[in-house]
Length: 443
Image (cartoon, rainbow, N blue to C red; front, side):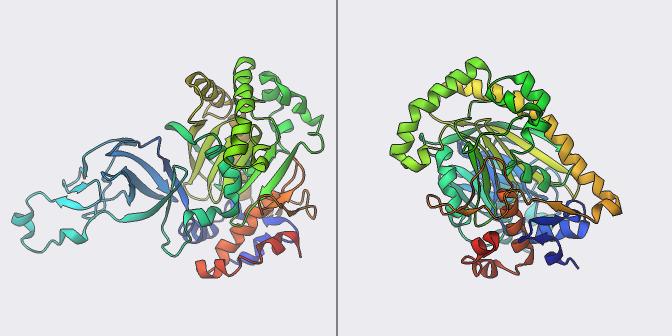
């Protein structure tokens, strides 16, 4: 049995290292986190037409997501209710229905079992087709981004995102919406799913060191950070964490900092022209963040960089391996030339073979695999940077760390992680709605 209280010390900002390797902890995560949290599935731009589908994962369960005839979206576990074989073998496409290649059982877009070969001859009147449709998964959308949830007692997606929506809206809706450019690149990393999530949730500390060579090669304003010779100046950014562990690190006015000269000029002009529109559409307070660089994660395993414009899901494949899905984020109203420039820049930096992606992957794998050693695994991880300096953000109602370099978002992620592992159900989690800030602020 896992002693969850021994894993995470919220007050002192430490975590047990065994969370990156232990098989029993991983099993509990699949049940308590991936079994009850909202997990990213797809975006409207990926399945725009009736019959469009994509295959993805929720934890280790394979899921089929389909655009319905009424324009809605449904998701199903991708297995045949006859003998459990996979129904859809393609990663994505368009179809009028789905047929299992094992015995030919056929399902409609709505998951209903429509036909069975030689049904009367071999089953007689035994088969009750209306009870044998594909198992449906609860889905909801926020600004065109579709998420699934196995737990029907979970709050709505909007409530799960909570006050963190204040920051999502800046890029998801500030200029009329966002979209993903796919299909996703897919890659395997030999690491625990939490190592990339914590890196993306707000780690600016590693940038000048891990990415020193890449920053020098890329040039641009962030190259001065290479080798950790300079810290971002005071007031250059903030760290944010929220109720359910979603977090973001923001570097002000740096969205185009890693783009090439011409690409960066196009993007900078776009942000300058649209900042007043964001203020009008959303608020002046949100507009001040528009054009900044966001490194962020939506709990538990969905991360994105806005500015570097990558959108990722870290699908667990056991405690020491993940499959990474990577898309490019663009704003819908961007001119095509800028969308193309953004995509080129993303592939160069955080695509599967991107320069910065490769840098990060080495760290993530070593953080996981070293924990096979019993003496190393016995230690704790430290996330105490900025501890005690946070306060409640009056604009967004989240917890804010007033520096670009800090680990506020780490501590918020692992506070939520502990809560999900401990709670017996969503009612117990809801009962803590009024106390989570006190936990982080040590009040």
